[in-house]
Every structure is written in structure tokens, then in C-alpha cells.
Amino acid sequence: MNFTIEVEQEIDGRWLAEVMELPGCLVYGQTRQQAIAKVEALALRVVADRLDEDETIATTLTVSFVAA
Picture 1: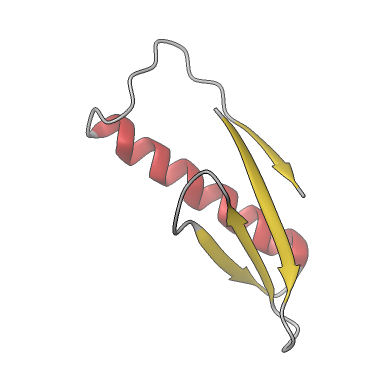
Picture 2: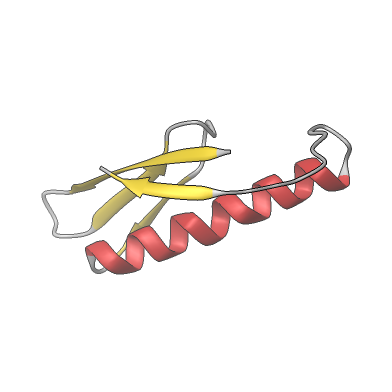
């Protein structure tokens, strides 16, 4: 699984990070790095929940993130 993270700074200074392949997986952070770290953690929780519910079947799971 490869995930693309889009990051942008809001007018109020907060950073928004979103995983494009997981609808609704977005977070705010005080810094760019914090937003990326938080959205990576959220994405991993979403993937874990999907595996737990047998929504995704994978014999070997490799996850990578690319911040755009």
C-alpha cells in the first residue's frame, strides 16, 4: 500500500495533512511535521481496523508514505 499525503497551511497558521487514498483521513497540526506524523498514525489505525474487519486481505503488508 502506498499512500500520498497532501499537506497545506491554513490561513490561521495550522497545517492540514490528508491521506488521499483514505477518504476522510485528515488531521490538523501546529507544524508541518506534526500534521504529517498525526496523519500517518491515523492512516495506520484505519488500515489496522480494515484488516481487523477483514476488509483488506494481504499476505504481506508493506506501507509507505510520500508527503507531497
